[in-house]
Image (cartoon, rainbow, N blue to C red):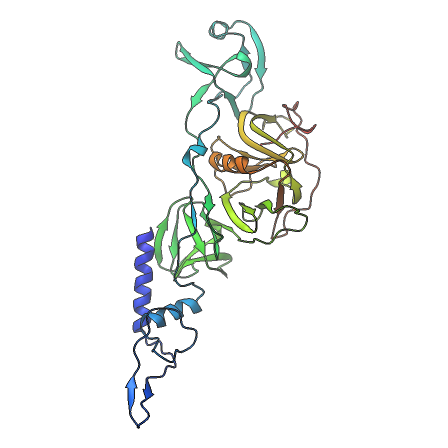
Length: 399
């Protein structure tokens, strides 16, 4: 990918240097006796005005032309790297309940295999995961031992999202983001323009300007290279402390762009994709403070009268509660981040939630905002109809 963009940039520089771009330069200097001597070509660089000792032709012309298009010189990679991959390892093993109906929890493995003593039940629902301390296969059926020692029929799983955000060594000079689906880039902001390169899901992109075209916003990610905003998400770099934040540490949650940025002492130190609340269960804008942390936590609930949306999620990793039942936490269930989809919480890939959990202290600020103004200002978080799981507040948790 980087090679493709490099070849594009080199081709553009050659084109500009051969395309008749002319700057008003002094071709020679008087010798004092009626003669002239030629000035040398300047070293490649960005010259805002014509130097007195050299002529900024060739590469310098191309560099200036790129600067006028909004590109810095030199174009650098982001001052960032992926965090430690070990952060993505979950703190507990998990198993998924694959049946749709109510599931019994048995007192022992023997009871589970012989339809013996039932000590509890897990209501039916589409998303139910249990902590797995051990597993056994009996007559083609798999049973796992869960929290509390009970046994339930479930399928162990070992594949969860391992994508990660970016940890920064310095604040970047421009905005950046990620693609959220596979997409080509285009030579101009138009779906009918020739394609330039192909990007995979969750590729990192730098963003130099945004332009509206064909009913969409488009991001310019390189010289003559554009991607539509519907296929990418952006982190708008803003080191200015938000009103109401009284520490030099805060988490910036952008509801419109579905991204998170972490700031400390006036600089960006971390950024990641997220998924926030959707519909009536939107994440509340406002300024909050982290009031409780859980390395793992059980979440359960439902919002429909028929309880068809019931969820039961044990060992949800690295939760930071900041607004009643709304929390920042990791997800292990299959999902695509960059879209509003949760019940009010801020969902993150496990490794990103782990990073933020390690960084954040109780009392740190969480700034939740929607730059588009589409999200209503705070209203009480709707309470699920199910009996709440263990929570740090009287409200029931939401994933």
